[in-house]
Amino acid sequence: MPLAPFGRRAAAFLIDLGFTAALFALVATLLAPLLIRYGYINESDEIVFALNLNWYSLAWTVFYFGMTTYLGRGRTPGKAILGIRVVSLVHRRISLWHSVERALGYAASLLEFGFGFVQFFIHPNRRTVHDRIAETIVVIEPRKQHRQPIPAPDRKD
Image 1 (tube, one colour):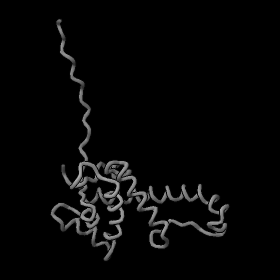
Image 2 (cartoon, rainbow, N blue to C red; image 1 turned 120 degrees about the horizontal axis):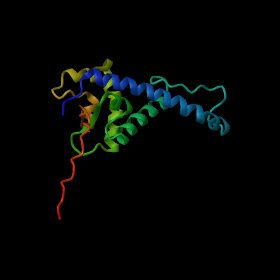
Image 3 (tube, rainbow, N blue to C red; image 1 turned 90 degrees about the horizontal axis):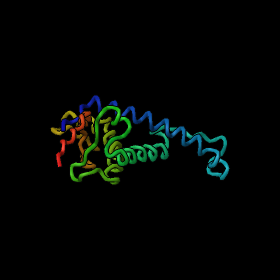
Image 4 (cartoon, helix red, strand yellow; image 1 turned 180 degrees about the vertical axis):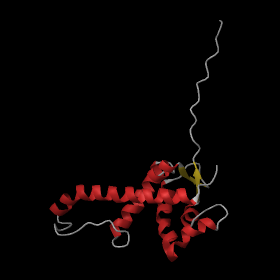
């Protein structure tokens, strides 16, 4: 299978960040009354999705990317939209651990001003830091061809 180009991978990542933030807002809105009622937060507290400001945004992001990659069998919603998929190099199917490991690896790719993402252009198999951590590659998913069913042969018994 051909390796996914950087533009598709970056666009899928940005789409997924948008989905992550939208789902976070929905869940936070639904849970806030419960958290206030049981005293976990005050009514004046703000629940903000900001990857650099709080632990729960980071935890939510790892949860989102880990679970969608695992449940989507290598496809997050953004990857599915753009026709790419994460594939394990060591297993037939990407495992939950590899999915979470890969999600955690995004932080490693962001270190040093995003150099882990730039390694896509250096590595011969187009692998970034998070790909190498989780032992994965990202490929272009072949389009499903609509085949005409093969008619059953006429039987003369």
